[in-house]
Length: 466
Image (cartoon, rainbow, N blue to C red; front, side, top):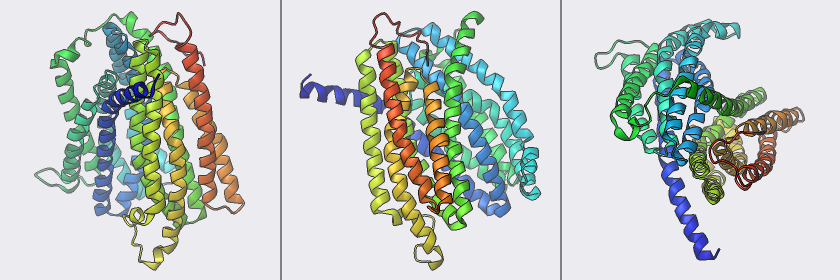
């Protein structure tokens, strides 16, 4: 293939991938503003309310990471069948997803309702737990619509219509901020519920948005063709597929998020200044990771469509183009970390205050190391996305546990005991990310060879042998 043909293929594949990924990127960035404003509102209620809110938010995010990861298998399966033009199979996946989400609702609600007892068991302050309980009881009623809208959004993402996800965020965020503010402070005729208002505000927002989107999907002719209820016997195999593909995804996200919680605990053992500096680095780490994470979702959808169409070349093109954009974006971010760290740190701390000198110095050093981690994480996320599109989620789970919990965390903890302070944990993470890339490249090549370049493989009914 000549240079002109390569260029033409690169730009055409870029257009397809970016059309899928950009709405997901914008959606992720917009949704982070809910947590930002919620923290501001909680801070106005007092330090105890802020602590209670942080406690609830961390547990809720961990729970939703597992649920969201599991239900994201719906997008993987729908993308496969959409590429193969199998509308009946898409319907089976949709209803299997709803059934699976419904089965998870009751245990999730019971967990949130009684979570305050667990907080007390682990030694949290009774005053903080009491406030957290008010928050939790309101938030519990957000579970039902939250799970339903997750299924709907994963369903349309699998169809490649990711602009719907952006529309959801543009409606959800201002409505959520409005209800949280009104119910927490008793504004605009609403009752003054204090910290409980943020939980009830979330519940009201999810119910309104979920009902609105459900009506829209049902009335829209382009979606109605997928809502024909199939026979139960056809749903059962898809339930197994969702569980088989989705559970490793949910656990993968849980282990990755959990690692950075463990990192924070280790940093806190060094000093409060070290923990604060590390939180600054993680604040921007998560913000910019939204972009590469969304690009990985776009790669998953594109690879899924290509496999469904039995388009062998498009699978590799999507992966290569995805790695290119993820890596180049993170290179720009790394340059910001390295050359303009003061601009980032100044958002949280006064650089001129002598009391902040240690935090500022440590934050600069942690940002420099975080840049290296994200440079290697970008291609790793892209390969994650490609393997998800190939329905291989078990290896991604294995690689995450290996690189973060078997390699990075023990090495980082050992470095701490030998006096390397917080730098050792970040350097251990850099090493782990590099190992992760090699592992995922090996597995990706193996899967491509196994499923795409062996003659006679069916395009849709692929079974993971890992």
